[in-house]
Amino acid sequence: MAQIAFIGLGNMGGPMARNLLAAGHGVAVFDLSEAALAGMAEAGARVAGSSREAAEGAEVVITMLPAGAHVEAVYLASDDQACLLDQLPAGTLLLDCSTIAAETARSLAAAAAQRGLAMLDAPVSGGVGGAEAGTLTFMVGGDGDALDRARPVLEAMGKNIFHAGAAGAGQVAKMCNNMLLAVLMSGTAEALALGVREGLDPAVLSNIMKQSSGGNWALNVYNPYPGVMEGVPASRGYEGGFLVDLMLKDLGLALDAAAKLGQSAPLGSLARSLYTLHKQQASSAEQDAGRLDFSSIQKLFLAEV
Image 1 (tube, rainbow, N blue to C red):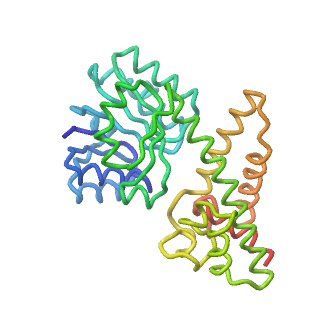
Image 2: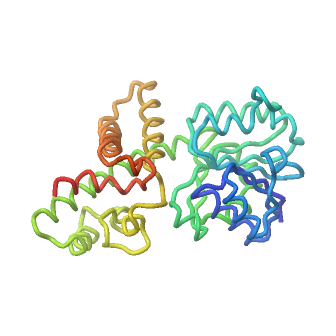
Image 3: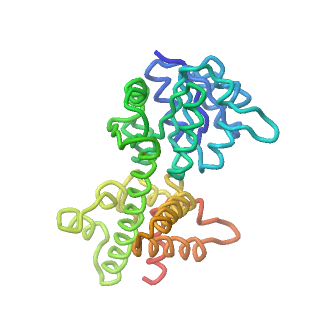
């Protein structure tokens, strides 16, 4: 079993780290949240006071952070701390499971390679439920030999591991997947709202569409309409899950990439506009809609029902 440093214990990172512990790996953790650290200590992890302390003695370093700036802050030098890449011994394996720009992933992989370190971008799909169940899908970019080394670790957290290509390819795959996911969720929410307005029961309509040509992942496992499906964010006030703010970030990554390539992405652009409008309309003094699960886009269409 490996000695692993896990940095970033949010909605996804916490369950992933717990599954590594359950598989018998030694895990040292760091996060800015004291509550997250306390929970991991109870689960048997070694709690560190910094990312550098967590990485001491680690064979594998895993990061699961909100954005590229946070990942760069961990691995590269900053005003108040030395470069973590310079402190790790040659041969250490680095797995970044965050969703960041492909060019950032390529830059970090190159910086790691210069120091004799292997780095893979390995963003995930499957949501909090997949993280808790250990059934995530990993989309991996980087060297094939490094992926072979990483497989026993990744298999403790997921059931599908795809080698997308060279460094950055995992991020490209995730970017494309999440752009499509935003389009699918928006369309599903719009169709459900229309059916309800016409007098249909949302559960009945969902079952019909699931078995018809409109069937999709949102209807099958992540229904956005409140009360239709148990155990999903829509049935608990859209709390937890994959945040609207993170979906907006990922759509921004996709549209930035499309713009640099001169590629038209009208549906992705529309999805971002819808999520932006939803965040503006659903937010209040008591609640920032950016902190709701992305399936809360249903609220945008229910406001008209």
